[in-house]
Structure formats: C-alpha cells, structure tokens
Image 1 (cartoon, rainbow, N blue to C red):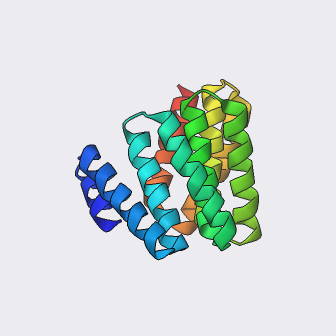
Image 2 (image 1 turned 45 degrees about the horizontal axis):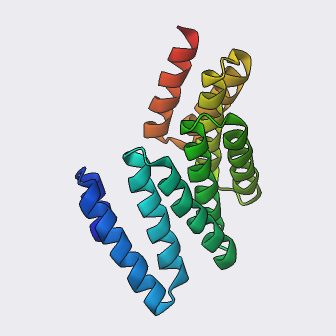
Amino acid sequence: NLEGLLYRNMGRSDEAMRAHEQSIALYQKSNYMPGLERAYSNLGCVFQDVSQWERALYYFQESAALSERTGEVWRRVAAAINLAEIFKFQGKFDEAIAYNSQAQNLALAHDLAELVGITLLNLGTIYLKLRDLPEANSYLEKCRHQFADLGTETYLVETLCSLARLRI
C-alpha cells in the first residue's frame, strides 16, 4: 500500500495501480479487511487522478462496503466523501450532495471536525458549480470558520479560493 502511495505522489499512475493491485491481492489472501479497505480506497484515488471515473467508483464502493463491515467510522466518512467526489466529477450533483450529507452527518455524530469541514467545502463547491450562490456561500463560510478554528491551513486556503471564485 505504501509503495502505491509513493508512486501516486510521484505521478506514476501505472506503477501505483500495480502496487495497489498487489496490496489488494495480499490483503485478500491474508483476510486483513482494514488493509484491504485502504487498498481499495487508494486504488480508487489513482483511477480518480487519471479520470477513470467508473473504475474509481467501483473501488470506492468496495472501500465503502468494507468500511461499513469493519465499523471504522473515519474510513466510512472518507469513503462517502470519495464517492461524492466521483459523482461531482461526473456531474451527478444530487448523488454528490447525498453522499456528502451522509458523510457530514456521520462526521458530526462522531466529532470528526476536519472531515466535517471537508464535507462543507465539498458541498460549497457543488453548489458553486450549480450556480446556487447563496447556498454555496453558506457552506463555504461555515467551512471557512471550521478550518480557521481547527488551524487547518491547506483546507482553509482551498476554501478561501472557492469563496473568491464565488465573489468574482
């Protein structure tokens, strides 16, 4: 799994895919479900990087199903966020909103503040794409406050950029 992450960070998608596929085979053989869930998610991210939406969707759905079975809440939220992103890229905004809302509710229930912020950012950018500017502004402002309170600079900068696009 780490080898695949390294290749992905280096922009070497083909090698990342092979490494994650090898991880999946090893985790399946050893029946290690948390590792298998992460490998599915990581492979989905690689396919997302290269705009292979259907393959990314498949691996994110596999990741979501496993995280549901293992009961890892953080991973369940992350899986729902990943699924929402694929639907957003495909222009399926109703599905993207539904998965982000599901992720947000689960994150709120388990006090996962950074993941709540990510769902707020995602919802804001979806409404921005839909040209529902008041709704986009509402989510992005909540997101700005969330990340400012957390001191999460990377997401705060992304939020501020989205707010700037909103105001242009």
